[in-house]
Image (cartoon, rainbow over all chains, first blue to last red; front, side, top):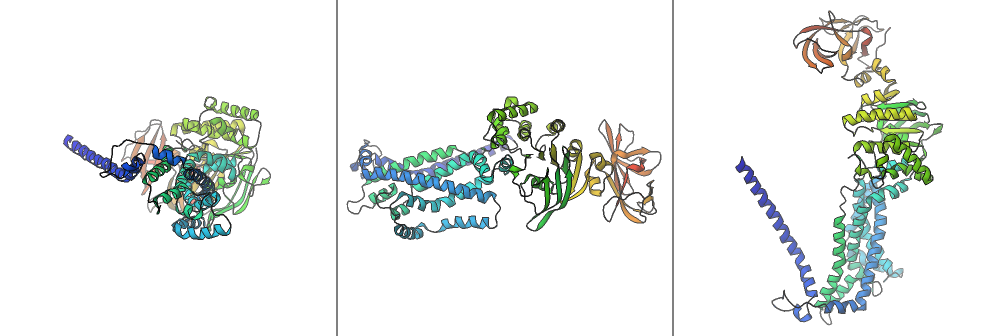
Length: 284
Length: 353
């Protein structure tokens, strides 16, 4: 008996170690390019291309200082913040309302409507980019923040809608019913009861949306030129510089600068665990 | 306080009718329980009164208003849900005051009314806690408090005690009764627990398959069930039933050898019937129906005997103790008044001639 227990313990341990090491290995594979980018951003130009690559070198902030001072980079950083925040806020507002409607209101064809909206995400963005450009040009909307925000909403709203729908479905319907008996309209019940309870879900969805908009390249490339252009466009420009060749120092530095806010956001999201937030609403 | 009138109410989902024309009149200040097995339509009916479900036909009148097309918030009713549905992000104080705040009452009055309700329910010290910091029984009280502060014309309860453990349920049951005696607000109470329905209410509405089986005072349902369903549903342990035939007007043929004298006169003769006797109405006697004892279960205050009567199982509930053993041949009998006879073809009560 004791032997058996020991054996199964051993087997469990082996399984655990295998899982842990598989995780470490996988993370290493995925994180290595990021690690290398961050490492290279602190190197001087001559250290970047040494063979074998240098793991230890005298780090420098030279590349950061020069890139932050570049007006096209700083302006694009500001544009990215405006566009990503705007698209995030607009999509969370529209998407939450749509998700709530899908989760609660019994309308014929609601499910089909929801699936159709989701299916619109299946269209390759490149197929939309060109028509969008033509429409924007016709309406004289090219190179504006709002154009990019609206373009991002086309893929963010379906995403937000489905995430929030799932979240709202998990909330007991009696909460709104109680609010409606307590004197609220359906809208009132949504804003006074459902939204406050859903804050963690709404915030994490919002942050995911912002991250998606933050990193978007294709629409930004097609729809903006100078004034509203975003940081991914700048990175693409540096990488694809056919005249001087790619400036790897600038590329890795701007890349790192772009990733930092995303990492911070992602860490923030992790903290808001959606589970257990409606605790105490119903039986316990 | 208002009367509630339910007139020929029907409800269907996707062309399937689930409530088939219900009429109930609930008087001012009355406590009425809607009871029935799950799926009988009792919760749907309650939600229709609350305005949370639409009505396909018929009318619901609260006070003097037809409320069919009035929004839940304007019906002046309060409802306590099975899962309490407390607002998790608000303190108990805010939970209880929410409805008053919606009505834009002055903060001072809200505060006063919340305090009064909290006093009645013993919640004063928990007012600044969030629902998650409360036990099940306390949450249940908050849910009631939220209904009380509004001073509504009608209280609706949807199985409010079924999430509590047995001991707490009994305690809350008497608190509820006390509360009703104190406030005498018209109350409609949905439950699947017949004991709750019997002990709490002035009148009980027994529902089955979207229809009303019987409406009556608790003891009336117990003494004179009008259908087999009510007879089986009300009372614990369940009533004994056996099939037979009325040969002349007063004796029942169970088998070729066994004929039981029912001791009363019925209008029909030569008809298939079902006879029902409550276990607590059967006694061991010198003569009567011959049975063989199968199981004896003493609980101290009473003894339950399972016996066999002409192929039928019979439960007898004796007050006190007995020396009867399994295998013994005994006679049981019941007062004619406590023998219920139902027509086998309709499952309805057969009346005396």
